[in-house]
Length: 211
Image 1: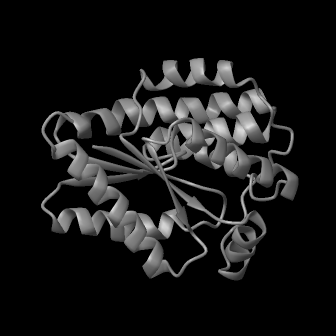
Image 2: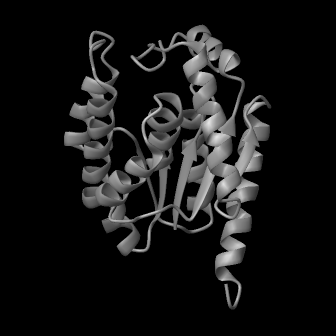
């Protein structure tokens, strides 16, 4: 089973993925957690380039190709082998981030991005995508208040981040069977409970006869 966590900056994906993995392990699943960009030695090197605030001249097309290169390596080296071994994979961001950030945020052609993503992933899609939804101003303020380092994308305009959030909602509306939207403005405990409930529902559907 392949589960991804998506959302705007500061929504809490990185802090929620660990407890969600622990919940699944308690249920007897072997769980692999990973992230994008990164998750492999090669991917982490690409991540450093993408997030470096000095890289202000990076073209949007170069940006999306770097994200796709990191994703291709992650799918090939980590995600597909884990799924083949019967593991549950939890990934902090995946291909939907490219559609939200480079498609809706940067304005790149969505059809081209879908083709690029298909090539990079070999068509691998998540079974469940959890959208941690939060007002972008609140999310960025969270990151700053927690002393987190602000990367190159964090420093984009509020208009950009609002387009990204709107993009996520459009993606979720287009595939309601795959997406579950969770209000990330709730307490961390309430968010985790909502994530676990969504995963439970997905597991029940997969285990039901004829599903």
